[in-house]
Length: 113
Length: 116
Image 1 (tube, each protein chain N blue to C red):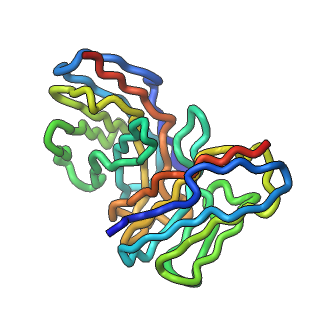
Image 2 (image 1 turned 45 degrees about the vertical axis):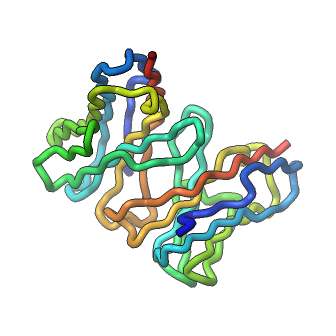
């Protein structure tokens, strides 16, 4: 098993550009989520999905879109990047929403100039 | 909403010593879970240990153990016989039963440095 994979590992964008951060898992997990980590902070939940076709907002959803067309993939879209979105982004998956261990991807470091 | 507070931004101990990282939380929930995650310089988030709030017995995983005080809303992590590889950021995290839109709520982290 590859676990949770994220691409790219690093990305630099200019303000106003759009891009998609990719996340995939091969563990047949129903629950997937996106977090962002800012300096001196813990991770904060952006969006989550409890299964294919179902997504919902977390704590900090503004400026981000998600979709879940398959169990394996959960991409995060930035439609018009802003410097405030400079952060490290983590994708996570688990068998369910609560107690089950959350498996994290290696993260994507995004810089918006 | 829940909050998680880690009051020690950085700690440094000698190899083989025992170190305790502090975590307090605030919630009105009765059923929840608590976690400690390790983030080494590689950036990977690694689950260290977890505790169900309904269990009175403190969780242990090899050299890692917790002191869970539900009434005080305290959840500290003890690392025994510390090793150089334990150097990392450590995050305390809370999840209410059912997870959902709140997901994991993290503290700001403690940077633990193990000195040779």
